[in-house]
Amino acid sequence: MRKILFVLVAVAMLLSACGGAQPTATPTAAPTAAPTTAPAAVPTVAPTATPLPPGSIQINGAGATFPLPVYTEWAYAYQYVDPSVVINYQGIGSGGGKKAIIDGTVDFAGSDSVLKDEEYQAGKDLQMYPILAGAVVVIYNINWAQPFPADAKIPTLVLDRQTLVDIYSAKITKWNDPAILALNPDLGGYLPDASITVVHRSDGSGTTEIFTKALSAFSPEWKTNVGAGASVQWPVDKAGNGVGSKGNQGVAAAVQNTPNSLGYVELSYAVSNKLAYAAMRNKAGKVVQADAASVQSAMADFAGAFDAKLTANIVDAPGEGSWPIVGYTYLILHTTSMEDCLKARKLLEYIRWSLTDQGAGKRAAELGYAVLPPAVRDNVLAKLGEVTCKGQPVLK
Image (cartoon, helix red, strand yellow):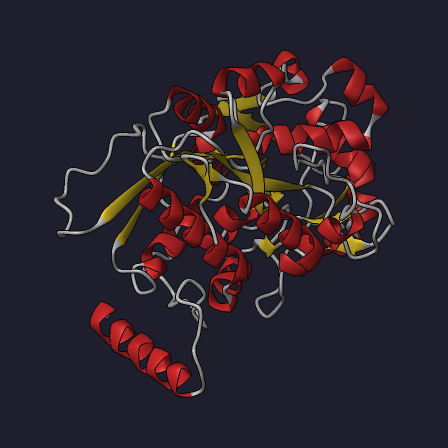
């Protein structure tokens, strides 16, 4: 399969060359990568033991699992763009990635949560760069009160902002609660008189930070009593109907194995693993599905919201087509202290390719991510242009 992909890419590049010179770091498309499911998190940031071909440059990254599916595919595809580069990204969580880049054990880190002031100080010359945005969705496993007709399509569960808060606050504890029934008239008679088991992450995670930032935006009471962060004290645990599981794979397994449960994972994980997930009534009162378009809409709503450090909170967007639980995923780089200037240039060329290549963007969208709007992307590219190695700009 890889040989066929290589031939197709080579032909495409030859045809492109006939029409005029093309920038070497910006090919017309990226081949679709082999993996079709979200890989499990890898618990170490050590480089792979496989010997590299002579002249190869291995670039090591680690961090957030939120973008792991697309980073895996991009790393595969980029071998056909620049065969001299091997991208090794390991999903160990946002906190692990931030620690690794501060400690200098990786070339870049991935994070869904922003650096704290003390982390900027410890890292000395760190900069965050938004690369994509993604949605967090609520997956569910309901034992319906009665079977659906054989030829019927089961309606998608709909939740709204306050109902979701009330479920995680243990104020709504039954699937046939009037608030859920009101949002799902097509499921009347099917939603069971059964307790809801509420699953959440047990480990600190950027996914939890995005989710709890959304709950805080939905509800002043949640913001005051629980708050937002990579880990929080969950009211459902105190109420006795909460279950903690590690990683997206743990949350998904808990929901799949527990009748009448729900939990939250990133959209790409739900898509890759064919998990049922709820639609949401957003801030504008419109029922929306989580997809690349609704994430793109949320980014556009907050296009001017970046702070001086190029970070932004984009939950609970006001647009009619916007998904309400959205967050950026960032790469973190050292901006002045990289010592291997060739590796630095290869790394920045890879990042530039991921931001500008149409094929890379298409595959990201298929996995449920949204590429940056032009105004945001241009800000990121300009910031990348400020990275130096031994006093000289890395990108020309």
